[in-house]
Every structure is written in structure tokens, then in C-alpha cells.
Picture 1: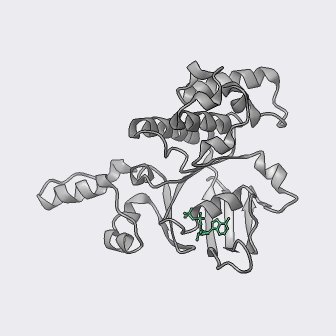
Picture 2 (picture 1 turned 90 degrees about the horizontal axis):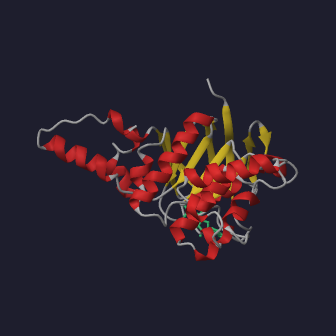
Length: 264
Ligand code: ADP
């Protein structure tokens, strides 16, 4: 059985002593081959969790372990080699003159040979459907294309942990589905811990597990099927159940029974 790759133990965090706590005693584990979706209304602390995993922030209380190593200012440089993260706004993640420079950026300083870099640039751009743009200047790309390239850049480092924080928000529904298919295939093939933070609850249905955040606390964590049976409770904390679940329930009401099993 796969071991825990990420452990949050009683983690509390606030941005400054004057600010209120934005995470309160957050405890959860993520295994090395799991896809975990983190959902919750705006301001519930999801992005803060992502930044704590990547060591962009450090908790005031509790501890975070990645691969058994405590996340500290000293260990974070080592840990980051294994963690790929893509945020909502891809503009903040572009530095190179061409798309291929940007994909290569994360691989530099990781001891990856030139030959392997060239190979990975091509394979990851192909995986995200951007092969034709290898030599394009990033500023000429649309928001959705930039998100694809940013995802290629993190896939290229072969991370053990991949965090997508609203990283497909600028893609159309088909593009989003396509990218998530690519990423989830890699996830199951390479034994990668995938963490997705998303508003797209259709996407959440495919995850192995869902962590629901509410006001800085873990409100519930379970398999998607369990989470979405609590419709009324979810609505109380500002979340709606995915359309597929509503549709299945509506069909059941008129006597048409469909199994929810394939949704996982
Ligand atoms: P989510 O990702 O669920 O929308 P965040 O983790 O971004 O939530 O934010 C959690 C809380 O922390 C919110 O109340 C937000 O206003 C606050 N917050 C986020 N970033 C900062 C910051 N840089 N300084 C102070 N407060 C912040």
C-alpha cells in the first residue's frame, strides 16, 4: 500500500499577528498515488494550503511533512524539487522568450541533461496539446494556452506532488476535460500525488478523495460519492452539488435508476 506523501498535523496559519487565523488545526494526509480535490467557498483557505505545501508560507502552529521531511526554511529547497504547482494566473509564471524556454525553466538547476530536457519539452507540450507553439513568444498565447504551457512546465520536472490551483480556470469545458484526462493518466501511471483546487465540481467527481474546507477548517473529507450525498449540508456552506449528481437524483425521482459507481 502506498505511503503518506503529504501530512498536515494540526496546522494553523495566519498571514500576520493582526490577521485572523485562516487555517485552524488542519489535519489530513495524502498518499503518493492519490488524487485529492480540495473544495470550499472563496476564502476558506484552499490556496493557503497549496502555498504551505510548496513552502511559500510556513505555519505558526503544527507541522507539515512531505515525504516524511518536515517543511522548514532549510528543507524547502530540497522539497520543492519534487513539488510542481500551477496557479490560476499563468502570466505570473512566465519568464522565457519562447514557450520552450518556459517549459525548460523548471528543469534548470535540477541536474537534468540537455538531451532529456529536449525530450521532455516535446513530450509535455504534446501532452497538453501545444506542440505547434514550441517557439512562440508566450505573450502571444491566450489565457487557456498559457495555462496549458504552465502545466507542461511542471509535468516536465516529473514531480512527486502536483498542485493545480484553479489552473484550468481559463480553459473551455472541453479543454479542461482534455487536460485533466492527461494529468490524471500521468497521475495513475507515475504514482503522483495530485491535488486539485477547483470550482469545477464535475472535475471533483473524478478524484479519489475530496477535502471540503469551510472557514479555515476541514469540514469533511471522503470519497466524492459520499461528499455529494450531503446536498443540503453542502449548500449551507455555499457549495452546490455537481450537475451529474443532480441529474442522477432527478432521474431517480422519476423512476429511472442509474448507478453512481462509474462517477468515481
Ligand atoms: P481560498 O483559496 O479558499 O479562496 P485563501 O487561502 O486564498 O482562500 O484565503 C484564505 C483567507 O486568507 C481569506 O480570508 C483571505 O482574505 C486571506 N488571505 C489570503 N491571502 C492573504 C494575504 N496575502 N494577506 C492577508 N490575508 C490573506
